[in-house]
Amino acid sequence: MKLLETLFEKFLWNSRLMVLAAVLMSLVSAAAVLYLSSVDAWIMVSHLSDYMSSEISQEQRVELRAETIKHVVEIIDGYLLATVLLIFALGLYELFISKIDGAEEKESASKILIINSLDDLKNRLAKVILMILIVRYFEHALNMKFDTPLDLLYFAGGIALLGLALYLTHSHEADSK
Image (cartoon, rainbow, N blue to C red; front, side, top):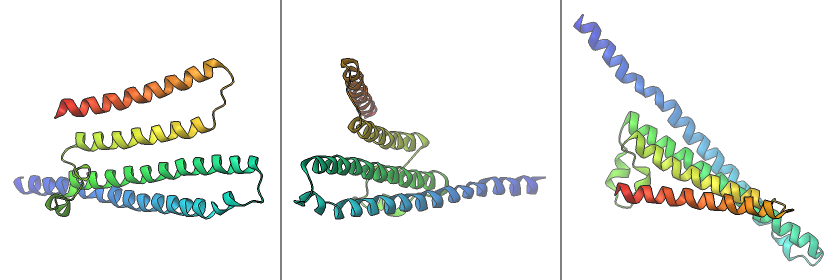
């Protein structure tokens, strides 16, 4: 009976290795999103020569500028999403598989990449996700039409709520130190 228990416990312990699938696919997804965002950035930069062209009207120049800013926000959003996937992959690996020796041995290693508990992973992901939400709000703000004073008030309220979220995030950090 003890042999059966030992084998079963070994099987249970090794079942944590299934998390490697999530780690690998998160890394592949992060690389894919980084690739997409980098291609978008390259395409955006390559179209900037049109902005200097004397052949476009002032209206077209204003429209091109607005589109470029929108693309910059989308690119930032993509890079932040890739960061979330990378932090998630590293965190899962450290929590379920093994500590990453390279991250712990180097002083230059970012503390954000060292995950000691599920709460560490959750807090780090929450910060990056909050940044993604802020970027997305900014992206939507670029397309907003302020037809009434109430629209402007809603917009200001959204900014105030984002500021409150950032404040609460940083006050939580200060309390835990």
